[in-house]
Image (cartoon, rainbow, N blue to C red; front, side, top):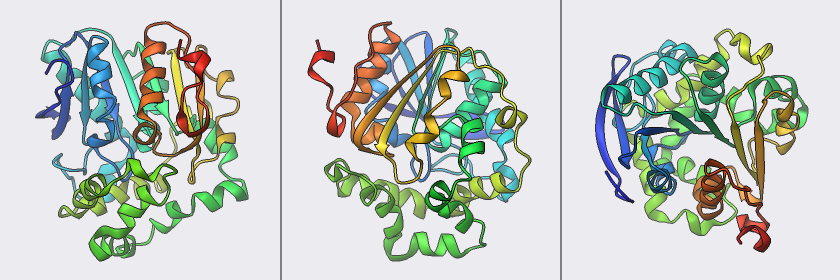
Length: 311
């Protein structure tokens, strides 16, 4: 797929079939990992940018989501399996002739996987981009404050059997739509056709349970050592953070520069957790500048680039 055209294919990796959106024909790979309760669709604004920068961009539906294989049982969603999925997708890209450097791009749950993958050095990465998900070591230490625990209430709710699924799917998956529309600052970015995509995605047989099983497996598994005693990450890292995140406090980002050798962070005031969908113009400009080695622009209110940084 060249230019701005996005196509979809199924890729065999780690014993599963992944439904993957693809854009571009470059020798470099940009692998984009979505969050909860999103899908590969959440990267629709960024994929053409990577294609224009000389990448082949792959945005898979993670295991359990959309048309990707949906293993049953909580244990199938442990972190070791998720890391193997990413490694398998990179290996599959290599087998298809995409042999250049890899940039891993991640948001929300994709960021949990992305940070861990980068810290463990499962496969070589040239760059790492993470949006609205803090370094796991900082979340481990600061996520226990009362302010953050109140924001993270849903993680504990998800540990209850069957009830979360029932409530999320009730009334045509109203709670799924509200997760986006209710949290967004610029609600115009989430019209009915976007919300309907996520509603339908969650209503696929077994999908809601699979999506919640990420949280169930996380709470019942031993934490990776890289979360509690992290090595210094030497992969150049760009963090983009919507400040109006109802789930994760901005303070969780402070100190990341001490854990990452080459670290750049940009905050977007009056932009929600869904940063790459709500402020795609600013996010795309930041990604492009960072990859091209230029000054990464700052954002003003609502994710609008500051005038001095647009020149």
